[in-house]
Length: 294
Image 1 (cartoon, one colour):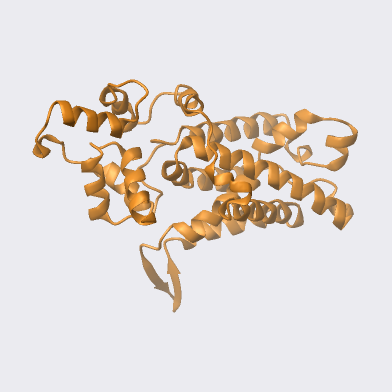
Image 2 (tube, rainbow, N blue to C red):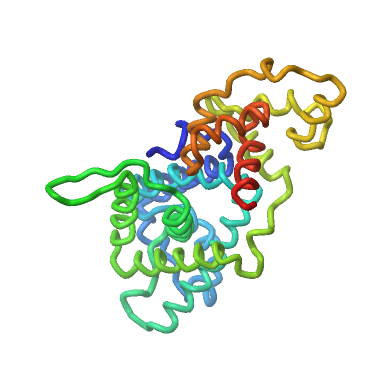
């Protein structure tokens, strides 16, 4: 289980976020300031060090945490592919807002001197993503080691556990707050799952770096010849005016099929959806999700 094809195909928001985490961690680690980046009530509300709040959102406090955190963020790119970049942006913003609020409340209520500051890094996003990972990602393989049962999801949980316990209470609290934020999003708190950012948000992040190798998104603009009309609608319009034999549709790429399978869809259904969507993976995902809702 690897979250679909390698690279950040159809996941520009995740790509930008991972790059930001690496840069912030390296910069502040070189300056030997990483241990002072933890969020504290005094810094934010009394000393008004808002820069510290921004940096603590991205920068991990150590190299091992960066390695485990970046790996989990990279794997969880599958959720951006599943719900689209515009909705994933809402998920990120909602997880950040709710987690920070819960963290400040926890520190204020516990009044523990050892919790003067919580560990830095995107724990809020990583552990929010564990909620859909638990409910929505199916187990594809199971195996035994010394009589113990494991699955391909076990390694993701172990990486998360390592990150959760990396700084004991200073990291456990942000992790728990992230899980609560992810649960509220899944429960559609305030109908948050209906919201999405404008299309230009994803387009902006897509232009920040070169397209991933083998990305299917580069072919979308050439198919969408009707401007702002979605690609699947454009395809239907072309079929009405200029009927095309079904056999002319190219065979769906294996990486696109693998992406849909990694989301939990059946391989045969994924292939058929891609054929109907003219190999547009975003449209194929919508077709499969709509078929499940009926």
